[in-house]
Length: 127
View (cartoon, rainbow, N blue to C red):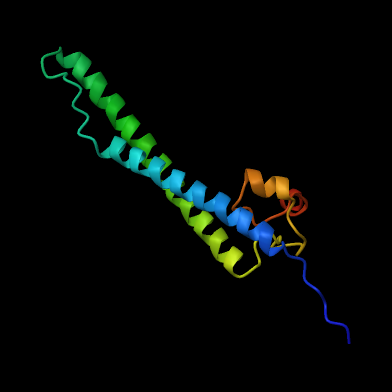
């Protein structure tokens, strides 16, 4: 009986993607720190001596901004988690294999979305 050879990227390709993902994780962590500091900031923009009406608008805007930054931080944390999962797939040598079709995900797609687990074909089947 012939053993089925599973498709996978070469060790050289995997090493290239590892470097790419490590850089993206590092950048994403930096961005997350900025986002967290933005929504944890006391927001005092020196409006203590301005009119009460302006201050009310300022506080409303500040609340909306904090909520938006919180949502961005949550998305950024998910992105980092997805990238770390991609690193695990590199270690397991399953990186770049579509979890639906079992075929290799196009390299161009992985360069744009390095944490992708679906090929374009599988993504289109979901629609």
